[in-house]
Image 1 (cartoon, one colour):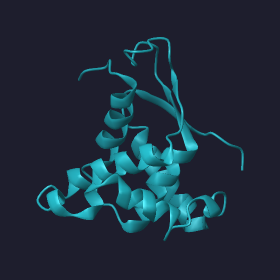
Image 2 (spheres, one colour; image 1 turned 60 degrees about the horizontal axis):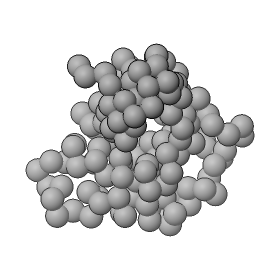
Image 3 (cartoon, helix red, strand yellow; image 1 turned 90 degrees about the vertical axis):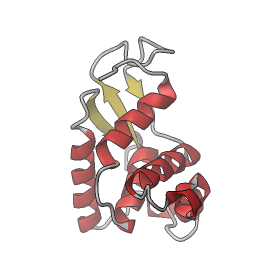
Length: 140
């Protein structure tokens, strides 16, 4: 497996390899967005990010960045229908976060079940050979 990528591809590689083959619910997509937007990733070593070889911590994604990767994951899982479906666009997930999900308003207010599932998703992310840890970027 290739282990040196531009930063944008590091994000894509880590998240897509962890989640693109999974059955994800609507709640899982919300929690993935929450994870991507609020947690940073410690890489196992320097040299993974080709355009910044000394980088070992990649920061949480912006809302648009998280929405883009979720759209990629959704499209990977739903390849047979993803071409003409709104979920294959980052806009769908961006507006979902800022609309129906009230994403920013729910920060630090996950239910016990959501916290448990978030931990499971983090464990899936930690299975990627490039990831050493996943850490909340802002103290709650």
